Length: 287
Length: 157
Image 1 (cartoon, rainbow over the protein chains, first blue to last red):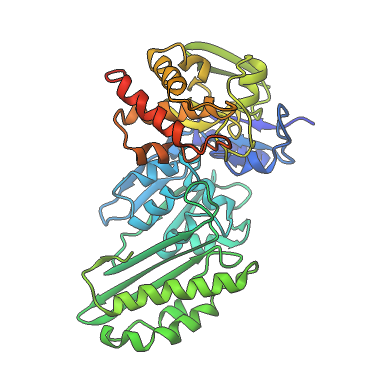
Image 2: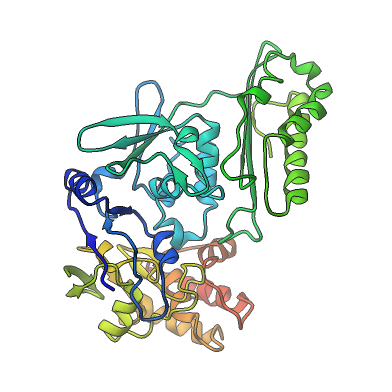
């Protein structure tokens, strides 16, 4: 068997190849090269045409727009994201906990979203922050929330002629924030469970609340409906709503494997974050 | 078939063939550089670590078509340099090596660390080799040997 493989030199060339052949973009290769590996000394065989876009500089780098929106090129690596202080905290932290340093030097944000695994580390905080993906084809550019883009495990809305070119993260605005990744060890762990959450408090009232659960269902779980249970509530009454909220969030996640562990741990993490917030500490990240 | 040009241990080289061939296979079978080992084949164990443009990567999950124009350094290239010599001597002096299979990758990880952080703490070293698995040593002697290299090699990095 012989692979069909293209190595475009520019984004325009890549978009043409994508339109004409439907070749699958290989960004860092950390998922695709493992998925189709065959063994020592043997070249992987891909059952579809591939285009290696690793070196397209047009899709690399991070910039900040006037309103504070952070735009990350699809081929920006996890190391580059983790070390850039302009990137919102949750995304940097998630990037810094992916695999080990060699993987983080290779894996890209576009690849992590395109792979659309519910265990992917970056979609979870991106969905919390209402980040969007920019999808480009020869004829069109469109943008949609990462939450809408990922449909379920390994399924997303990328059209046959499109490439993920960038991720846009609106400037976050919160009083308290929380992020936790649970893996089997500190390095090289695929997430067993992740959670991030933010709360904004103004004049003693909760004006925004969000939570995002990763690896707890076929896709990252958010529920604006359940989040609304806390919005508008006075912070001094928060402690009396915690149990009701935590039970409602339990209905948002749908873990398939080890559901008891994932449900109990998600509840514990949310209880912890909310009970610390209820004490109204100084604004910041809650450990 | 594609033609890929890259720098390998300081020399410009060419590869002709399937661009989806893994870099580790190109190094070991194409260029006979067998110092780079393959352990897991999934980018998890670090045995196949090389430097790509000065950064640590696992060559088992990188297709050769992704490195056109890049600078690749393997253990064979590193050992010819004063930095590499210092690492080799420190690993020997520190008793870091048992079966040795992980060691080329460990040395590459140590080099990647020292290039950006010539005076690492023990914690820095442990983080830097956290993607490199060793089943013999329990890591302590490897960590100590890397710290030894950073002291002995003062001024090299």
